[in-house]
Amino acid sequence: MTALAPAQPTDTVRPAYREPTFLRYVAGHAVSVLGDQVWYVALSWMAVRLASPAVAGVILAVSSLPRLALLLLGGAIVDRYGPRRLMIGSDLLRAVISLGAAGAALAAPGVPLLVTVALVFGLADAVFLPAAGALAPRLLHPDQIASGVGTTTLAARAALTIGAPLGGVLVATGGLPLACLVNAATFVVSVASLASVRPRPAASRSGPREPLLGALRAGLAYLVRHRLLRVLLLVTLLTNLGFVGPMNVGLALVSTARGWGAAGIGDMLAGFGIGAVAGALLMMRVRSGGRVVAAVCAAVQGGAVFTIAVAPHLWTAVLATTLTGLTSGPLAIIVTSLTQRFTDDRFRGRVASVNTLANLGVTPMAMAVMGAVAGQLGNVPAFAGSAGLELAAGLMCILWLRVPAP
Image 1 (cartoon, rainbow, N blue to C red):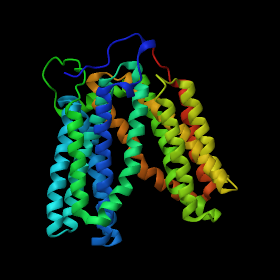
Image 2 (image 1 turned 135 degrees about the vertical axis):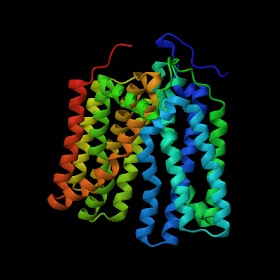
Image 3 (image 1 turned 180 degrees about the vertical axis):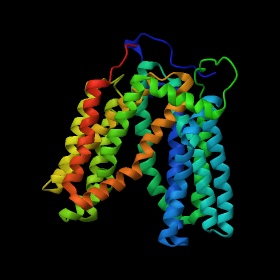
C-alpha cells in the first residue's frame, strides 16, 4: 500500500505538491480532463461539419444534460462504492467508448455516433466529478488541503489550456478517428495513475445500506444542517452568479461596444488566465485561508468586474480581468479547501456533487441573465448587478462564515 502523508505537527507538514501519492492523483485527474477537452473540441467541430448549426447546438447540449441531471445521484453512488474505484471505472468506460467511436468514425461518422458518445461521456462525468472531489482530501493531511486544491486547480487549468488546441490539431490532422484514439489513450494513462493511489479508508458504516435516493436525501440534509458548509455553498453560488456572466457574455458585449473587436476579447481573457495562474501558484504555498481573505478577494473581484464595464481603454480592462483572475483563484481555493476540510468522509461524494452542480449548473442561467439585463438596461447596469453579487458574497464571508477550530 502506498504511504499517505504522515501525521506530523502542523509546522512541519510539507506542501501537497511534494506528496507522491497526491501527485499521481493530480496527474490522473488532469490527464482525464485533457481527454475531455480533446473530445469536446472534436465533438464541436464534427457537429458543425455534419449537421446544421441548430442541430450542432443540440448535440453539444446533450453532452451536458446527463451530467447535470444525474450529478447529485452520482455523489450518492461515490459515497457508497468509493471515489477511487469510480474514477477508474469512469475512465475505463470512456476509453472503451472512445476506441469504439474511433472504429465507427472510420466507417461512417454521423450524428447518431456523436450523440451516443456525448451521452455516455455525460453519464461518466456525473460520477467522475464528485469522485474526484471526494478522493483528494483523503490523500492529504488537513493542513495540506489548501495547497492540494491549488495544485489540482493549476493542473486542471493547464489541461484545459493544452486540451483545446490539441483537439483542434488532432481533428485537423486525422479527423474524428484520430481524436478518439488519442482521447482513449489519455483515459488509459489516467487509469494507470489512479490505480497506484491508495486513499485512507473512510469511516466504517453501521447498519444496512439505505437506498440511493434515501442516501441522497440524507446527504442534502447533512449539508443543510452543517452551518459552515451551508454558508460556503451560498458563497459559491453568489460568486459564480456574479462572475460567469461578465467573463463569458460580458467581455464580448464590452469589446463590441468599445470597438476593440475579437482581439480585445482575447486580450482580456489572456489577462484573466495570467491572473488565475498567479493566484493558484500563490495558494499552493498556503496551508489555509480565512474568512477575511475570502471576503477581501470577493470584494476586490466585484470591483474589478465593474471596472471592466467602465474601462476607457483596453489596457485598463485587461488589468481588471487580470485582477479578476488573481482573486478568483484564491477565493475558489479557500472555499473548496474549507469545504473539503470540514466535510465528513461519509458524505464527501454527495457534498462534492452539490458543489459541482453549484459551479456548473449556474453557468447557463448566469449567461442568459447577463445578456438579458445588458440588452434591456445596458452593459454598465448589468456589470454593476454582477459586482453586487460578488460584494454580497464578501459580506456573507464576514458576517456568517465562522470556521471552527481544528
